Length: 308
Image 1 (tube, helix red, strand yellow):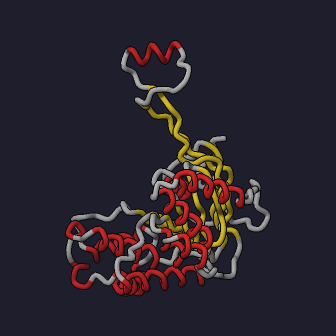
Image 2: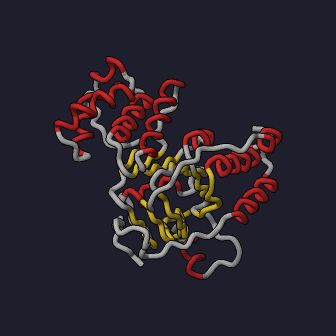
Image 3: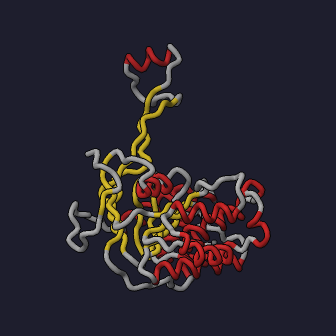
């Protein structure tokens, strides 16, 4: 994307009516203590000097997610963008209940359905068998399966491969099946972590339509994607994370393009310009204050016990 394209592109994006809050993230932080062989710059304490001579590594704190707050509402499709290591996947895993935060809390009106690239499907079983197991795992009844299985097969569009073991599938085929299972179950909250198949035009159109159906049914979708253009085209809102902190939270089209323009300059070696764009974006961010008790709904449940 050139600078001219970024400036001259028309403003557009998906606009939808919004419902009640479904996910509330309040001052969320995830910090890890890990060893590092990197030498400390500046003055070094005596214990660190001794440790270095003995060949021991320093212990440093990695702030994977750092003080992030926002509220998501029914009907929204929220893209999460950022470079590798920005905290996108960690944040979704906390929201899914798969990881415990260091501080802060996540409240949700129902248990989110998490769809990641490593979502558990059994490689020795056929795609069809995995479809049935996946639906049972989500609490569906045999009667539900009669209705949902044909929809899943149509959305995944794997043809006769649906009868073959999952271990014979390409990564794209597996991603299509995972998305079809999760989306056809029509969860109230759907978390998608780099697992949305957009390999061909037909698959992309089917995925977009199914996500639109979930939105129209007042569901909430979070989509982590390394392809910002996908967020522009499929989401109503976007959150840009950088080094664990929120840079921007706004309309998907504007936020994703701001991220793409920053990333393009960084890739071209325009470090100073990229730094300026990052600071400009941060200056536009409006702080979100999430109250512990949201008076707009009484359906929220904690995804974790609060460690703070």
